[in-house]
Image (tube, rainbow, N blue to C red; front, side, top):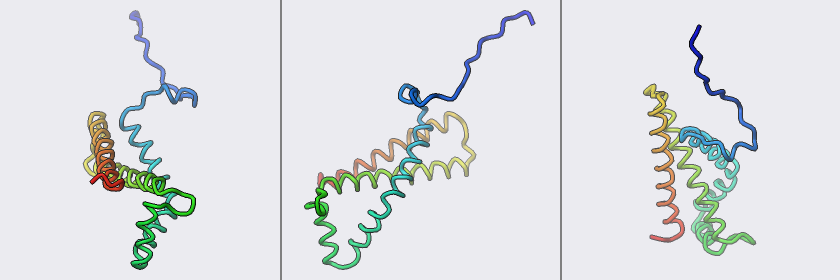
Length: 142
């Protein structure tokens, strides 16, 4: 071989200190957020069960449930309960939409880089847009 070989990039694992400067593609961001949202839903499951139980037990408990978003519970202020609920709304919506994205990709065998990029952008945009809409309702903007 007389021609000089083109120097190819070397792909290595990155160190923890390089995470901030590493640029993930949108599909990688969706994958990480899918795991984070699943963990969030699992960790806050007792809160979700409490909200459901309190809201459907009786009319009196439903009044206490709605009052918790205004006056709070004990030392926890109402705005913090709304913020945690907004986090749950985002976690559910993102986890659901990203899960549908994965099912759709598996069912249609859409594994191209361009298809993964576009579906990741749609997943991120739709989960944020729906979270903003439901968050505006939660905080009483409409």
